[in-house]
Length: 132
Image: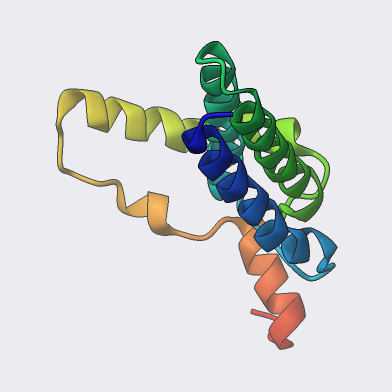
């Protein structure tokens, strides 16, 4: 065994130990923007280590990637509906206007884009007791 393989395996093992409390904590909420890239990095490193003949490092990285995948599925604020949340657009019209502004380089903004939707207004009314 190469000493580098051993060091990378230890590092991956430690990351799994440090991530375990997040997976066990029912109140933990880890954004998908954190967990999905970390999961992808673990899997890419695992395949890379395997291609270099560093099988211990590969298994450690794949295990760390799997841990991040579990965190993404179980501890994301959206719960188990990862793909539904990633593919859903809150407002396709707002997205299209933003995309158009980004592509044309226009710095003007539409003031109506900052106005809360009716659902936001209804939620605030029901939670703070006001009936505007």
